[in-house]
Image 1 (spheres, helix red, strand yellow):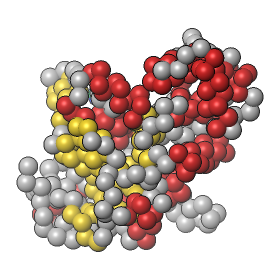
Image 2 (cartoon, rainbow, N blue to C red; image 1 turned 135 degrees about the vertical axis):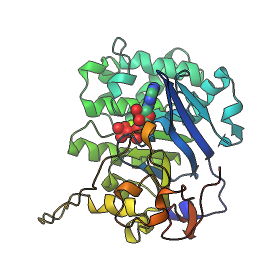
Image 3 (tube, helix red, strand yellow; image 1 turned 90 degrees about the horizontal axis):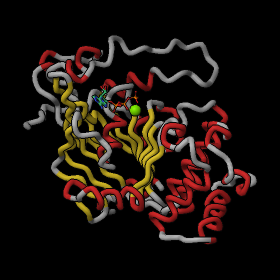
Length: 336
Ligand SMILES: Nc1ncnc2c1ncn2[C@@H]1O[C@H](COP(=O)(O)OP(=O)(O)OP(=O)(O)O)[C@@H](O)[C@H]1O
Ligand SMILES: [Mg+2]
């Protein structure tokens, strides 16, 4: 998988340039996301990691055209999925891409599963709308979908309502619904955050297996670098609405360049059972209406220099496939 992730010649499944997401609420307007570039290659798992509020979820929602307007206004230089420019698609065309090309699963499946319908009727809706299945073919395929997820007793599960299932089972059903149309990109936004640790591991293993079997690309959003280490090929580190570092995962852990990434790594709990103190990043994540000038991390940065508060540093590739936006490595600023 790593070979695919690193091959620069591969054409990205999804390629985003200059993504901005502005919210206008009660007389205030702010950019929650401000100039993000993303590339996701065939068959890889790319991660987006960052603290709460840095813009991970809105980035994902914008790819699917799901940011409500108003209050949200999405713009980008380009947002290409396979050969289609998503920004130019109408509502109906976008819905088609959303059903068949790109699927998404969320943190809490209860909010995206309809509580008043059985698993079968939700599965039927997807299989009818996006795959054109009718009659007996629907039930047959529904069972096949659940079997591919190694769900015990799929017939019984199909008759159940979401509230009758455990959290882990609900998330499996969500994954089943998301995969029923064989998407080329699956976006998973904190898919395991609401689950307990053992179930988390099972769901992540399931996602990995599905990816291996189907070859779909995955964009995995998480605030947990441990999840990134175990599941991603490449990672984007976001801070305050911007990508501050992107790298192949092994490289990021071996040689983190951005002071924010270094701080995040130091804040991972020591799983070896030692009593090493966790390094807490001083200060707080700024809210979008109050992003500081210059590098947005500078007020919390241990390596801060005099000019860090003047202009935003540009994300520049400093090693093959490894980019960082920090003045420690060069003077390049964002011009726009
Ligand atoms: N509909 C909305 N209206 C106004 N502001 C919004 C809206 N949705 C998101 N935001 C703001 O955009 C910023 C980014 O939010 P987002 O949900 O993407 O963060 P996140 O990185 O996913 O955080 P978390 O880890 O908590 O899920 C936040 O400041 C949030 O308050
Ligand atoms: Mg989120």
